[in-house]
Image (cartoon, rainbow, N blue to C red):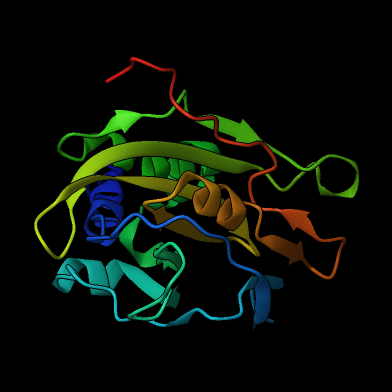
Length: 213
């Protein structure tokens, strides 16, 4: 499988949801732990399990959904979702897998291939410093037009954050129609191998400049 084919799997898993934009905020209150990956992270208390759509045979073969949660139907706050995916080693060559940065970049940059995608800045590569300098994360983010359940157009924000944990490629996918909620979800606290908790994405996405389409 080529890197382009592997990246296309993420494209299938990050199609935007039809959200209705509502102002509000969520609180962190549930915890996901995977001992084999050595990761623990928190997510909003009112999020409920979701069933990811758009998963074809290749997607199921090469990308495992470890967690998929969203705001419940009828929620009074902004609607959003958080998904954690693992990409299976069997779907990449040994050469592809050995180049972690190239593989992660291919996964996250798949967002830009979506129809109507508008990049929110440049893709980034960062680590958390100190005892987590080896924990390199690749981030890409876009905004995209969608429609709500009544057919009204609105904007959806999407972010992919990919990293390696115990030689396994994983990616968080964040979606929301509300910028404040989007930024809050990106600050989800995660711990790698029992080390200090850090926000998934430490920076804040700013509103687009006035007058920008």
